[in-house]
Length: 548
Image 1 (cartoon, rainbow, N blue to C red):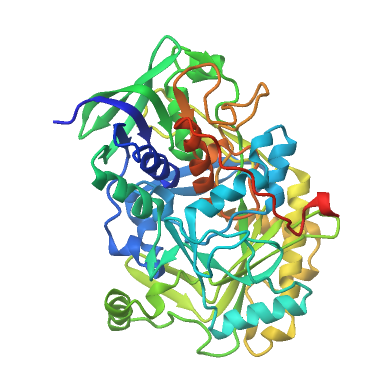
Image 2 (spheres, rainbow, N blue to C red; image 1 turned 90 degrees about the vertical axis):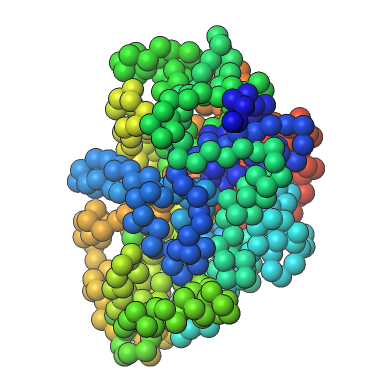
């Protein structure tokens, strides 16, 4: 039987929770409990990069949230998937490895979080990674997460890089170093053809050491308090309600939807909202669930002019088995790639001060879905709004912890977000007209986007825009009235309770959030341990306004 008393209880075994547990567990005298709502990650579909779409329909391993209604999108609901397994969304995502723009973190510092400038974050980015081209001023070479630069050898990948340069975007060798802006081959957290998640790289070794207990399929109902002090959690496992005590701290690592949900269920949040659900208030923290942000995305699609352009077309069971065998026994072939091998960052217009649009790119039309393959010859640019201003929120529908909260993102509610995404879509269609695409480009699925009026492009966006699955900022850091945690993740108004995950980001970074979330966990866990932060490492970067 496990003891139900621990030094620390961590809620969520995703990217952040895995790192927090592993780093705390380096002290052999500390006992840690990790509670994860989903099952293990021991699936070939989780480990094989090219099979990443299969877990998306595995109901046991996903949180399936219906977000909305979105007023700017005509009241549409948007399905939002999160990882519900060991490794969390890091066991489900596309493995694209992006830090964000260095200036994003200097903006955090300008907002009052002086310890979160790029110079303060850089040593933690370096600490977590093992970059395949080695460590340097900007990159780490000995961290737990292996980073692979993708080869980008297929004809559509070469056309993407060539056309981008013809449209005026520089070729950037390492977008996670001096310059983010430009076209590039993507980096991915892939280790010798296997997904390198926080669960695999951090948490599994920590559990093997013996002082970290992991309970899977455990739904946390609430944090328990003695007065204002968090002293444990109540959770459900196999239909039974159980409890565990935390002698030092409870740390929420559930992500931008689940962490505020647990806080609200526990009586930490806007007092009036809690009262309306019959929940006794422990602390009136009005910002819980507020300020939610996400990256919106839409795909500009073209058919290919001839056959043989796209991989994974006309796959049958024999071809799929061959791909699987090459991956399993040789770590070669289509199975070792996430297929997101090239991309770019650029400004939507000259009026924007630094890159605010991201391209992710697939050399095919359609999707690889669980149980069937529906791929056509062609290609698609996913146009992502990197620095949206629109904010939404997470609120309670019910005091029942088994019911999802209400989530509204308010996508494109701000006029500037609409302007920037419309400009980004138009420029994307202009890039596709460059000579680099002449031998591949067929007909557009939606012709003439570059020539359409703002109203027509926005009407198309309202019907076709979706999410890049990057929610954050619902328990944001700060010291103002709407901040939820301080710069060390400690929840305002209570004791012995922290949030460490993407929800604490004060503003969304320009890029995929898996890497910044891991950085936040590495940085905050030092403070949990009472360690002095790593010394800042000032490094010149292209958008640094102090140098221009």
